[in-house]
Length: 153
Image (tube, rainbow, N blue to C red):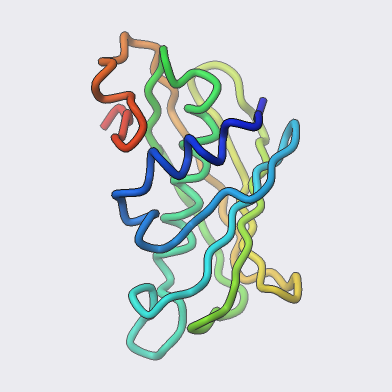
């Protein structure tokens, strides 16, 4: 499902977005997993100095949408339908966090993914489940090029 071009495509596609500002990078992939990392920056903190609770589900939805889009990026569009996240531990400024994404179902019009966020010790920080809608309507080439969002919504 995943291939060697993914990291470069991800970086180009999200460079000018919030994901790019957060510094999320794809770092590894296999036939059925995708791994991304980011360092917690000041702009991602809540008023108490912890990673804002909305960041992990936001990144989880972005990764799941990219995973659903990637093999079909020339012919399909995707949109997040549902995100459910549970926060288990806080992340702090400077922490390097890892997102491990696995598909539960990737076929038809709905894809379901799990995304775990872990700290550098491997401890779980957050777990999320994401549902993504896949639309096979003709994609406008201009909106599907790297650096733009080709989502349905």
